[in-house]
Amino acid sequence: MTDDTTEGSQQDPATAVQPEPVSDPDVSGDGTENEEPDTFPRSYVEQLRQENGKYRQRAQRADELAHRLHRALVEQTGRLQDASDLPFDEDHLSDTESLTSAIDELLTAKPHLAARRVTGEIGQGATPSTASVDLTALLRGQR
Image (cartoon, rainbow, N blue to C red; front, side, top):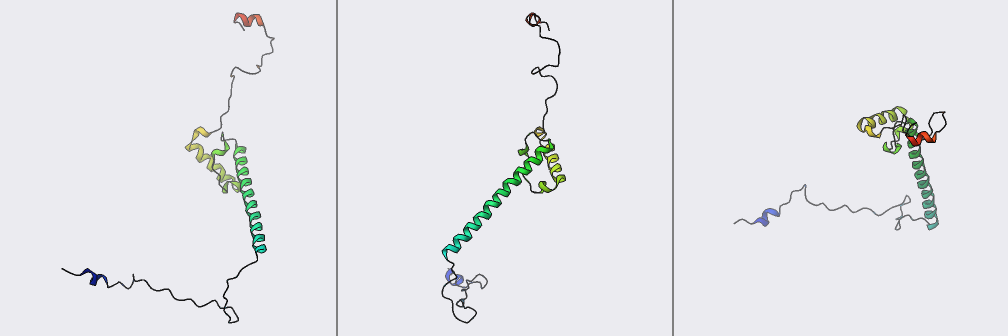
């Protein structure tokens, strides 16, 4: 019987855990040690957070406006029944050719999304006849 513990005690040097090097203490430019990390006053940090919040709100508003513009551009083409069927792409805002090609690709893949227009007489609304209404003819079934 062989002893597995003696064979396992030999480690591969590539897989052996190396100790981490000890870092030198933080030394400033004048040679003195800095014991405390840099800290900022609370009021300054709050001011930075408020400023960052304003920028995030502006960015969110810009995104909303970009989506509205995209929807308006798609509606302007009049080729889709619902403009929200075309997913938002920032390239569509500046390049009309990419918008047109994206709509073409969508309509070839899903032709049921195309805009539909009702034409012809559907039996409702005003009729173009100039004759007066004859109630007795309507009751008799004649028109």
